Length: 173
Image (cartoon, rainbow, N blue to C red; front, side, top):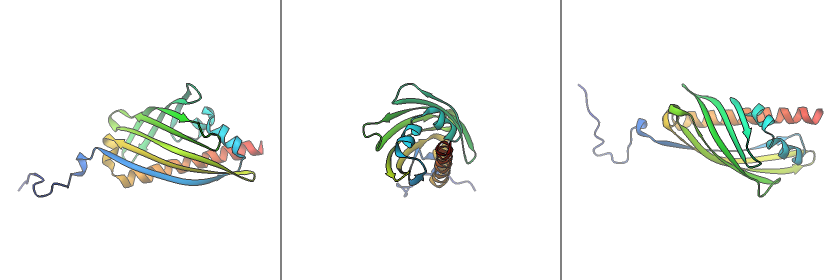
């Protein structure tokens, strides 16, 4: 016998499929084998960023504070091509900077968020710390926060591994 869901008696419970947005937060600390000025320069180099951002097809630098990106991502069963804009706030550079951005993946959903990054010199190395927060909506948000969080962590780890490798190559070269 089929039952209809009215939600009566459960005002605070919303079925998962009606969930509109999902928020995720990430933070980490990475040691990079390069001096702070080189790390900061590399984080502002579109060619290096495009090489390191997972799924990045295109990264256009419109100005010192504005970037446009096209990225293909797969989160669980959902694969989407996102296009978005990123704005940099370099007021505290090269010790700290922040970025905010938003992207649209069509039917798969949308995302907007930002990150605060600090760079600390430690001899010939640099300690990079970041705290990021993003709001995700659409089909992606319906996948559940655990899957989104774990995928975001993997993508961030991939980015920083690639970035650290590029910095190692540049230091050796």
